[in-house]
Length: 474
Image (cartoon, rainbow, N blue to C red):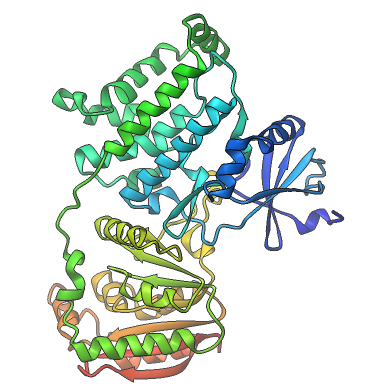
């Protein structure tokens, strides 16, 4: 493959394993393997369990291609090409059931690998992504031959980024998303143990995977990995015991669940005050905006709530990312989409007044939401007043942010709720009088026109809400 090294762009999140690195070449996702990793790949590619996982879509599509030279001039022994994930998300943007399904897929893959003589050396939640509501394992370079007498190397990562967050939410009702967002490596046992004292020490999974695991980490803090492996081999640790451990964790994870707390947003479609005429007019307007022009590859539905308009968008787009702040609402939406077999909509948890920033090493290891967006259509329905009044974000800032989420020439479908609308009046009632003199339809249209071309405008029958289709840079 004759390629200039400058054509290849290293993936900022792929540097922790020097044996294999991920690069981008145009639309292609490539993985370079050193000699050892290349040998592991050749052995892996010939196994029945791996080809089955590929055929079932549980591992991202992968094929070997001609080796290329990467930007630092290091020739790789082998190069793989992977399918491109439609929209990369991070575990702190997933709901509880999404994280649990991702954990179960990871364990299923490990359970299939062990009898075939392979293991997964990493256990990070970041090694999983989504095709809509379908989880997929993406770290093909993590597979390696298993050595009898050695524990699962990815166990600690699995606990910190998958199991501990699930325990936190299932047992204590505490949302895990802020914890994972704060630390790219996940939740340490020492951070969680103080929350599981007294009778909580006996909750499922806590004695073994939190307290005992933490105690073992402390006991072996001064020991080398080689020493620990030697001790386990001497104690008779085997592949069969490793497989039994994986099955036990899988059984535990399946039992973990959460009962969503009552939420104002859970019944929003009933309480938001839309008349039947308003709702019909809004759906017709959104449909027209989605079908005006080429088929959108990616639609962002911001403030998606129960997914009503995300589902509508999915009829006319390749992929939809439905973003909602309330984890319980997103979890309900995910479960419904999964049950429907809907594979084009990816629901995510995110506070749109505090969207996911760049994180990890140098702030680029995990890309920010804005850097991942580049949408063809952005739906911002019944959102602007929550940002402008509820969170004190100036209208011009709201419009600039919406435009920055778009690809060139993309369309923004935005709803402006007038100050006299009951929902806007409810928000204004909780603010000092006169705080938002610029929150007017005329001012919103002015700032929208300064950044976009307003292609269409329509008042809903109630007379207190206006819909706009605006073309970015038009």
